[in-house]
Image (cartoon, rainbow over all chains, first blue to last red):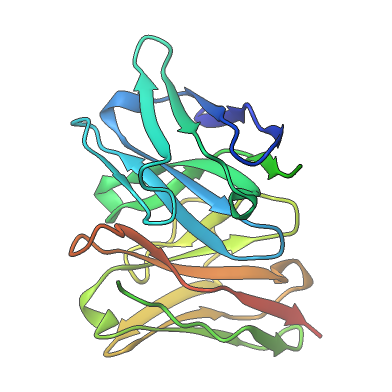
Length: 119
Length: 109
């Protein structure tokens, strides 16, 4: 079965760090374009970051310099290292696969993991 | 950066047709994707490439895209279609590679 399972969310103080994980099954992370998308409480979807199959990475301006996307091919897992966290980073974080054959539509989503940044 | 504009809400009676728009500068030149999100759940892709449906999505869901407006059309609306709907494009012309619209809440009366 093709699926994504996120973990690592929780309550963290402003300025702190957190690493999210996204374990994939049924397909190979390194052969696909993998992204993180977040959704603040009661708000819309916001693209956060992508790692292309070739290894290139890109970030939304709101997280550039603070977040780092990576992958572990041996574990077939995607990560998001989040540093210098702010209250406005509070959101549900989803990992998603961008289907490059479908003009990069997100065809597979994880269930999401909640990150709360608060003192 | 590229901006997508959706109406905050759309209401429709059961059995009728709902149309949700997504505006963007020359959006007709881009491929538009649509997602359905129900409360407490992850988004689900319902339309890709303007008008294609992934496996398992009912034929009642269709899409079109021309000029400055893309449209998601839901025919014979059912109570279970009540959800938030988001349009999205992939914009390689900027660092904001994936852009979402603000979302539209579909209410089934």
